[in-house]
Length: 237
Image (cartoon, rainbow, N blue to C red; front, side, top):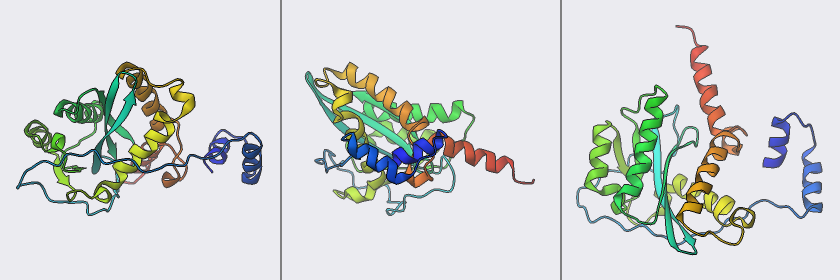
């Protein structure tokens, strides 16, 4: 389905059944993703923010709702962790970071990247909802203070329920399937955090600007945001 959509985007008119036949002949098939183990360590805080999302992962424009999560990668030199922040409207990865540590800086650096990138593009993040699980990284004082400083509203899901952060979990599964577990990408195995960091940077660029998404009408996240801005400019005053 995605190959057919991408070929049409590139001006190559071909029937979907032809794509299916040629892929079968070449031994190619779509990605089948499996479940991953839970790694979240819930913060022991009696005053956690409310769940403002309630599993409704929708937004009518960029910078209304971001979701954040952390996943893990096994390398030959040890475990590596990756944090991502995603804009729900366009599915764009606005911030990311890779580290060998699960300390707060991992999640905080991804958040800082997202805030910096949006402000650099002249966009306002004031009032957006930041949704995450109850992991200690997201409930740390430095993280919550940074959200407050940026006038971003914190939201967290219930304890131990991955469905409350389903969009971020789905991205992690996609990321692991398309990059980390992809034999072409990993070659003989991920050697170190440096290898993963370079690969993640390339993957995020591809994901944001060249990967089509069925949920976005077979558009890329970048194209979705461009189309949104263009539609706003076309409206009469």
